[in-house]
Image 1 (cartoon, rainbow over the protein chains, first blue to last red):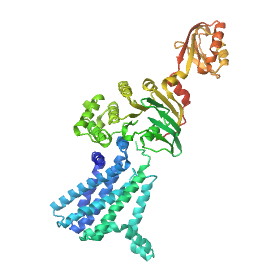
Image 2: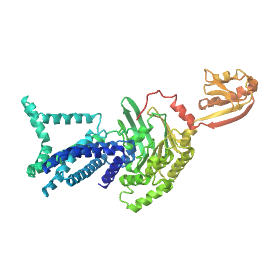
Image 3: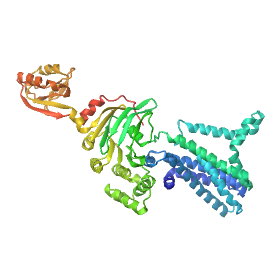
Image 4: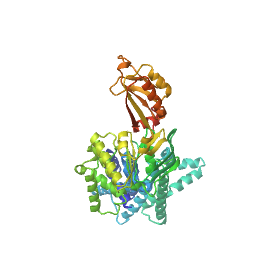
Length: 239
Length: 332
């Protein structure tokens, strides 16, 4: 655990000492400028800011894996007893970066009176967002060039796009008598959609808790997939 | 210490290693030679577990990768980190010896390494601001973190000036004397001759020669007969005996040219009577020594000296690797 923390800190420092380190900050600033232009209430904040910060989390995972996928990283890779520790460090690092940006964004929004939060119910934002970001970070791992094998990340991008398009066009699917597909899409996305919807509605009941468990379960499965892909992958760093 | 058995690795259609079997004894300084693209770096990456074999296996005994020091051929470093910071982070990530060490213990150990490698004055400098020679010393420092028993060095003196090369050689010798097993890939045959106890030569992924260096050098030798003037026609007579016989000039003699039959014949405007040269019998032609001497003496040639010279590593290398490889065979 200590090694994962040290490695995570190294990756973050390496990222923010490079030009690429500007990217998550710039995206965060741009998102804030657009999303908070007219202010937000707590319900909007949970969903809109949660998803926006999830995108930053995904981007940060891709950037951190990019740092780890360089020839200069070989002395670290050589010292790791398990490659899964590198992936864990990336996830921890991306969650840390996203949390810092989220904290800054929230503070600035509160100071500028562009956000209203009700305490203590606002504290539910923390487990909601952490579960969602954990899912996003784990989802981003197989999409990275560090983990992907033989273009598997392209399959991942296509699958996610298809899933989101299908979710957006569920009525179209049902008109075409593709109920099974519509239901399958709804079922697959249920944990994440329910997590954000219930949190936004301030309803922290059983379905919310089940959604959290399933979202974290998704994250575990995706992390396992990434570990399986990386375990026997030839590390041929671009030099 | 390290044993490869029938190790095979392909990159697409390129066969990088072809059933390579190699045994590296504990305490040896093992030099792996071979032309570019012959699979040397691929072998090191397989040992480190960065890549995986298509067939065969590498046995590292009880050593984990964290107990093996590895220095890459290319000096890639996180340029914005200071030397001490970089080494400290590496030590905390992997060195089993430091994982439970306190801050002061680790600091003392890093200080010791920096002093050993003459890096004290660079401790606070960014890696991106260091010269190639200093970076290579930082690379060696990261190799030595955790006091590994097996050290893999890929082209350790590549691109270094003579002083830095000597420094690196001295470090390798010191590590050898400290009982470490060192495996190095190199094109620098002089370096290999000076520091290695064992040598293996790869050609197109295949092992073509391996063994203790003294045995390899001792297996082949040349007989050199230094002679005075040489009557015309005698080179052809000697050549007819064996293709392993060459007649040429001494170092201060005249230019020579090989005949189609492999015999070097001199082209001198001054004539045969003025020539001074040597007859060389390689290992395959040793049996003709007496016959060659008799022919020379019967022809009235002055035989000035008879020497036996051990074949150099360069000659062995060139002999076993043969002509230059065809272009396009590159391995990652």
